[in-house]
Image 1: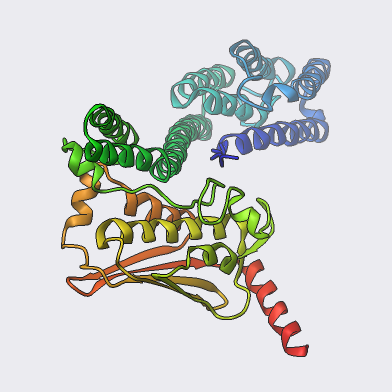
Image 2: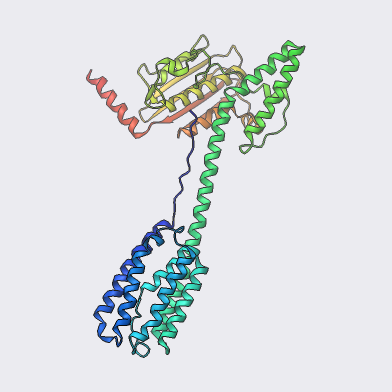
Amino acid sequence: MARREQVVRMSVEQPLWRALAAYRVLTLVYALLLAFFGRARYEHPAVAAGYLAVLAVWTLATLPRVANAASCTKRFLAADLTVALTGILLTPVADLQAQSVDGPTLPSIWTAGAVLAYAIKGGWRWAAVASTLVGVANLVERAHPSRDTLHNVLLVWVASIGIGYVVQIARASERTLARALEIEAATRERERLARDLHDSVLQVLAMVQRRGTALGGEAAELGRMAGEQEIALRTLVAGGLVRPSHVSEDEAAGAVVRIVESPEGREGPAGPKGPEGLGGAGESGEIDLRMLLAPRAGARITLADPGAPVPLAASAARELAAAVGAALDNVRVHAGEGARAWILVEDWGDEVIVTVRDDGPGIPEGRLAQAEGEGRMGVALSIRGRLRDLGGSAELISVPDQGTEVELKVPRTPRDQHEQRDQREQRGKA
């Protein structure tokens, strides 16, 4: 089953909506307590009581409206701001001394919640409009505004615009992050598909092209068509990864060879069952890496392992074995059928290291970069790409006339390390 990348979207503004809902409830309680303890100053207490009752019902009934941006509609925002402005303008009706003595309005600081809703929903421009209307209402309510009144109006105006601007920036950053995660997921999936194609279709097409050219006649025409399809498929796979250059059919065919065995269960030395036919695990659990590498040993390939099981997570073991297979394929192609190769498996507890070395002529300097530029991604995807996905690394050392060495490192997770220690302790006690 193909592994799927998932992009997790995070909402940076959702906590703001929750905070706004809590703010509205708390400031409602504050406005009610303020009116109760200052009830003696109201010449018309019925006006104050009636408005505060409406305010309480409105606040509690509209809590779902401030749960998220979708439910906080423009119509609700307009109605909410109207409730706040009405409370401010009704203050001198309930308290005849309100215009001459600085004191709280009927909604008090609850009004700021209505302005903050505009800021969170629409950004700094909406906040500027709402806070300006609130400021005008406060100036009308005071008739002769004092310095404190002007100070409070300016504070609400600046604070709401600032919060609205921050919300806009956060929202834009969230969109950018989501897009970046989508691109990363798409790139990783493209690389995975490119590795699978390299291990199967592309190598088969290259083999058909070479064999057809060697046989001649009608087979040569079939080989030519296979070579054209291989180059077209390489260009398609490499799109978005590297910019391929135009290469000849012979050059493209010379970079690949049919894979003998792969971890996906295709025919090869391990048989039609693939790694699972070797007594391995399924997608979950662990597999002894030696069981996946043992079928690759032969007359010219020597395998050296620790002599004890080397368990790895099933997916990691298969990917590592596939990378080893890709390295051996490169040995067959570039070092010749007569070249010898050695596979060394080392278990260091926190990581597993597999080294593949050959006695071939080595890789000329700059050849790997040239191959990637031509769309031949064997080392880049089948080896380094696989190890990168596992959190590991692949180092390639090549000396002219002295062969090539590929060192593959795969780290274990803390859980794997813990299980390894338990297994060693049990073997020690036995």
